[in-house]
Image 1 (cartoon, one colour):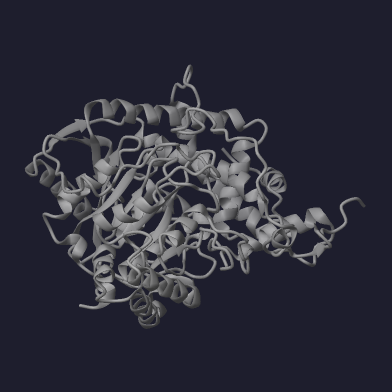
Image 2 (cartoon, rainbow over the protein chains, first blue to last red):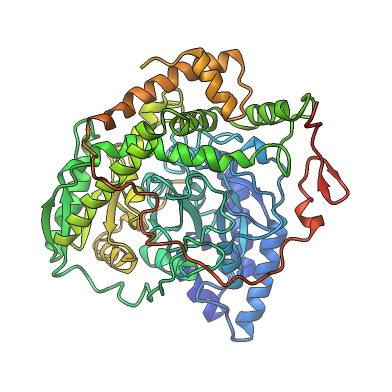
Length: 486
Length: 95
């Protein structure tokens, strides 16, 4: 077994026992990157110097018997959406090429304080808009399970790097499924916490009422441990919830006996891949064997979630991305005559086609004469979608569903068809619209060895229960312990 | 629903995007398709439904109104494409 095959907590145990150093673990990650990243292309840039310096400091703390956190010294990677002081951050966009953030995101500060070396910044769909990583201005990432396939998106680089054992865990962000779908496509555990659970300060904004940060790792316990380090109130983010986080690992082995788990009929639809449907239904049945009660539930407005999301998210994006104007940072068209032309040319050259498409759509939905018909109506339907969940959670403790209607698809397969790409998010978006926590759990494989994910949705701030439900399934099989053949 | 090229140009101008003629054509077609798909929301009766702007936020959180250190000018200007002294420099605004 290679050092890089260990889970975060297994490595942490070896660090604590003095069997291995953080410098050795970090060097092992860098060697693994050198070995496989030419094929996977998960990294946009490495921070070898910074990571090794952090590892040395961690080893000194371990030696002195005062580790900064349970994961002190465990190397990780960050989606390139998180501001990292002094380390280029592009959000997968040409418009931010060369941008050196003057400060750290709150989550990055927390991970640095906790002693985790940051190996580098990971590829993503430009401004987190996409479900395949093909939207990156720097070329797509490849799925370690099948290199001709997408790792999913938008946190596809984070997923691929962890699945390829280039890092032990990673942070992603999820606006409509961008943690959960790539986790499902690469056999990882990923959680999108409740809106407000984790600070968004210093996280480049896409759709501010939907964006949420979350951990991605190879086991449920790792995911819980990483979540623990970042789940706290942040006065720098006015949407960060002043809610104390519980100990996410305390009740992890508590099982599901006596829990009521909802199975929403609207999440098993025509056109789903039959292997995905059969595998997810098998996992749902396993919960019954483990002592949970399955309850049929209905979320009747599910079919409106896609349209709601593709009005609200682009509307928020068109507003958020107005800041890229060539004035304070980022690309500026130097040949422009006058200010107005400088804005227009800088933005046209700096943004990729999907980003421009969403800015156009969002601007249209917010423009005079269309605001009520599109934007306000979508906000009202969002209320109906939230109410569906509120009603369902009167009956059940959590909800089980597929993550994606298909397993990882081939790179290029959907790249020229925006609508069929948007359909990839049909099971993951409602959770963001309702602000609820959602977890992606490995639950099996297709015949051609592509991973399949189970989605577990919960009540607000019920992450601990989602992790416990996930763990109950994980310990019954070896799915999450299977490693990508790379 | 058919988007005209004039409408696409108007939206692009609001969004400060100088699209090429090819892009204008492409976005007219693609935005049409998306607008057709989202027209599905029109079939719902939403009378009396309150709009949701934030899913879990009851009200805005406020913090104490005390001054804190902010970025020093040289850090704030470090990524500027053009600067003059402690200011961002831009092309001439008033013709």
